[in-house]
Image 1 (cartoon, rainbow, N blue to C red):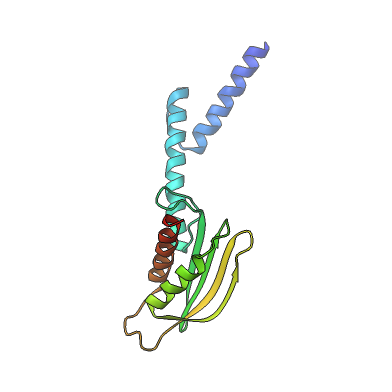
Image 2 (cartoon, rainbow, N blue to C red):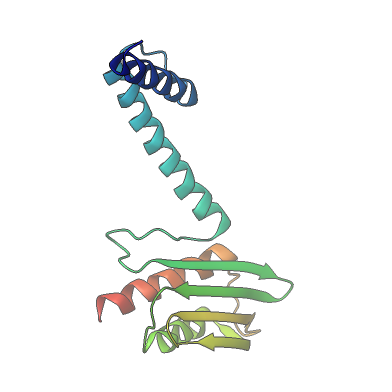
Amino acid sequence: MSSRDRKKATVYRKLQRLRSVVNSTAVNKTSIIVDASRYIEELKQKVEVLNQETGTSGISTSQNPLPMKVAVEALEKGFLINVFLEKNCPGLLVSILETFEELGLDVLDARVSCQENFQLEAIGGENPSNAEGIDAQMVKQAVMQAISKWSENI
């Protein structure tokens, strides 16, 4: 068997492996690769949905140029809020704290680091005077919106 035949056989095996991974019924190379591209796009969409469901967003988008992670967990009387951005963001803490105030959340405890990146872990308790009920998703959306607005002004 010549080296060309071995290479051809190797490419064929790899294409068949790719075909089985992406559950393709295609038989020619181009169609297998197109199916693989579609499969990758589907996986990206699933990751985005899972990120939204778990309350994190680690993907940079055109609407949100800063790669960030925001997670909000409901507690008995308030929320645990975690924010992480890959770079130091002077002034961002003020924007997030203003958002807490707008939501009627009192900061009960907080840890912040603004050295090489921005990290915030805060416990926000619902203010008793706040009659409207808020949930973790509302808090997450408000914090993400505050970050987006802040990033537009830098």
